[in-house]
Length: 234
Image (tube, rainbow, N blue to C red; front, side, top):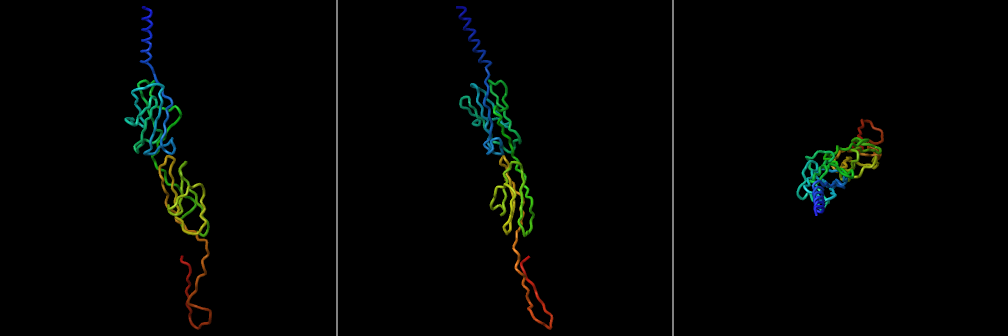
């Protein structure tokens, strides 16, 4: 009887000890944004941090970008947890940090398990640069190029923004007429677009008509003769 009691006591102590010092791990731990590029975020984008615990956890405290995530922004279904945060203009640019704490942790969790990350970028890009053309009137084709921020989506317009075309390489203007050329770019995070100034140029490749001489005609005269010449404007 004493031996049986002793064995039961050992089992109870063992269970209590295991419960007291039990630890739960998190895997996977993943972070992404709802930006078109899930590894980037601009002001107003939503960040989702998801993690799954190996067992039930309690006292869960999460921060994203230094903000405590509370209420409906921290939810779970069983061992699957989701923390969400919407970025604001006051957040610091760069990699978005996070922390996960809970009662049964081995250590505070501050990194993902799948190399996922989100970089916050709230700065609009500078205006793109149009090269190869200047304001003026020309009697030949004109070619221009546009350069901008690496990875940015660059567009150009030849009618002062009435119609935008994705830029993919040098643009040749070959038809006659007046062009109001500008370019704009949106960075990879979606900031922008930022537009350049307008360059106005005219292409005129048509020879003018002969000028008109007025006031005189062929003949022999015994007095002074005066004539005028009129032609194309400009």
